[in-house]
Image (cartoon, rainbow, N blue to C red; front, side, top):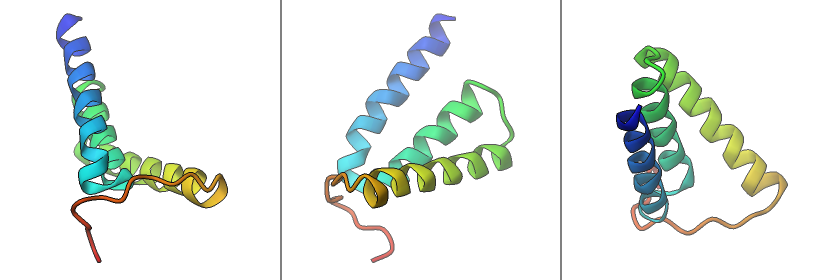
Length: 79
């Protein structure tokens, strides 16, 4: 149990520091993949689909609907 808690805390800390580097959506997708794959033992395919869907929905809700500004990433992916 402590190992799972430790992994969850480490993933959360990594997520916090990845957001300003690679951006909100990619960091969210990596965070969700890590949690679903290693804590829930979901398949890679299921983890990736869930992560992309969660990141896209979160991005749309926070930036498009609520107009919350996220930090500009240091590394811009795709443009």
